[in-house]
Image 1 (cartoon, helix red, strand yellow):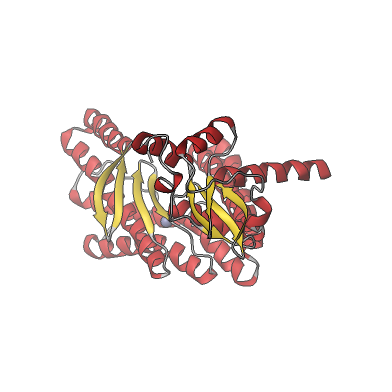
Image 2: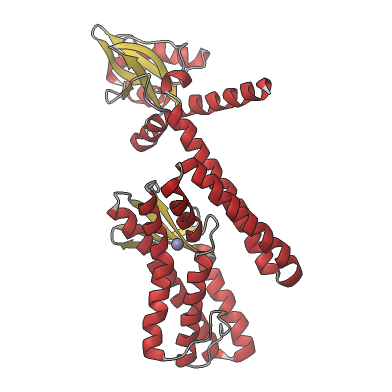
Length: 360
Ligand SMILES: [Zn+2]
């Protein structure tokens, strides 16, 4: 995410703070100092920081449970509206998803409980005291906010943790895509209620409703896309009309094809079959480093990836992203059948959607 400042690592997970978060601190300080004086302004600013530490622990909780199930977290980013843990892939086993989602709100409740044992009072879940006037009311407010965070996160609508818990519960009995659809339906119905009541009573509620409605929609889209990717073999989406190059040809020839054709990536075929792949970046870097007359074998990528035509698209897609390759060669029994790249996959989906529209 742009405008994020790297703070360091927690349990090996990159931790960043979005620049606008400091704007929030500044805004709170300035607005409270004018109204209540410097002491309460400092306490209010510290309270925001304390809340964000709790949000951070909540996100770390998600990440550590995800790690138990073999899913790594790329980074945790703190935004003025909350924390976001970017987990490489959500676990799809229902029990794992439930455990991973529920740990967040549970942590907020645990923090509230532990603090309550020391402080002995709280402001209630409404977090009415955002401008504490003493250390005691500071902690009383922090307890209230943690209870509120737990309740808010358990709203059964995506992208809240409650939405994931609900899908997990449904997915025990249902297929994952159907469970998602049902959970999205519940979430969006709830969002519409929020918007409706929000318009009469509280604009914040309406805004949360809009946020939940959009979040549910994008979750459904992602899960649908993933399930389609899983059903389509790469053989159906690959390009079959492509040129190949020989390793002893000069780089000049590759540039010629690249310049006058539509192809960005070329399989390099030698005596014994595929020897490498020549991508656009390699062609451009190769001209710079070795000149136009160097043989292609000197600049091609020898760490190319071959996939079988039957490989599901989601695996190819993941491999393209994780290996940072721009293209892969589709081959069967030593023979090249086609090429696949990210552009090609999105082109395939565009055509597929158009054909579906025609069929209707
Ligand atoms: Zn959470």
